[in-house]
Amino acid sequence: MRFGAVAGRLRCGATEAVELFTAESALDADGSVTETRSRLGPKRVSARDRNPTPMECDRCGDDAIHHAAYSGAHLCGDHLRRSVEKRVKRRVREDTLLDPEATPDDPDRWVIGLSGGKDSVALTQILDDVFGKDPRVEMLALTIHEGIEGYRDESLDACVELAENLSLRHEVVSYEEEFDVQMDDVVESDPENMAACAYCGVFRRDLLETYAAEFDADKLLTGHNLDDEAQTAMMNFLEGDVRQVAKHFDASLGPFDEREGTDEFVPRAKPLRDVPEKEIALYCHVRDLPTHMAECPHSSEAYRGEIQSTIHELEENHPGARHSIMAGYEELSALAAETYREGGDAADDSPDLGECERCGSKTSRDVCRKCRLLDSIEAA
Ligand code: SF4
Ligand SMILES: [Zn+2]
Ligand SMILES: [Zn+2]
Image (cartoon, rainbow, N blue to C red; front, top):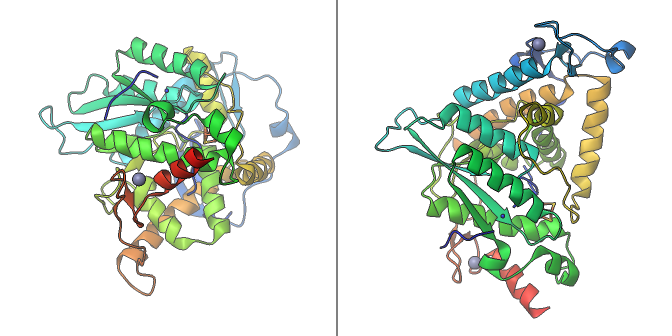
């Protein structure tokens, strides 16, 4: 396997549920979630909260650049930055991201999915600030290039600039180099009559797993933010698939010291998942980080878009709704994971995974989904 010279969006296409408004997150003035408690429903937002007048930072009196309606906090750039970093560091601690047994001789190896978008750039920067000089951690930024003209090339520039600024090992891999396909061509031929993201997600997952294994990674870290995760939680809940909710805990949600490990996939973590998308965008702006903000032209997750609009409206009218969704979902997923593991009525009956006879990827069939998709693309 080679680390080539090209890049990718690593955070789209996720499918990963929740009792809405049965628990509410209690928030620090900086927007940090400190505890959850039962309540009948989130507060309604007042007209003043919706249309706040220019305000001063609660901490220092400078001009505020952000008003977090869910906590009531007004923050200047510097205090917004500190608040975001504080929440990410706390999440890292609570998730026991750093293996307590890691040593300079046997470091924890992390692959960071770096797409050049604001979330992955903020994640990479913060992890480098905290762990860049820690000999117990080895980090590699991985960028995937899907072959989407006018989109990925620009974001690759942001990835390269950031990695150079941080002197961080950076590897770039492309669908073209690995699979001899470009997403622009796949969208054109569309042999399976599917949305672009359905192809792209399969290819991306395959590359992430392959390269994480190549790097002998212990963890795969992605830049999913609070909005992303609340959408995924809502989608899983609406899907009614509790087994999927349980899997979410072990795959990417639970603290590492509470998960049940598997040799089949590299475990994932999302250290930004307590921070709203808007605050991450402001964070990148305040720190003047190199980012590429454009949307993928093939983005086609219509259902996720619907959920996004619904949650946006909920948050507007009931600030704190996203935190409530995630607080309830995390608790639910831990309970579901426990139930499925204990092998009660809901014992895991998912099929055993073997190796694809073509490429060796994990699959429950003779030939994996990626190889079957590549066959049909080639035949088109
Ligand atoms: S096609 Fe879909 S999954 Fe692929 S980069 Fe674009 S939005 Fe992301
Ligand atoms: Zn301030
Ligand atoms: Zn295969």
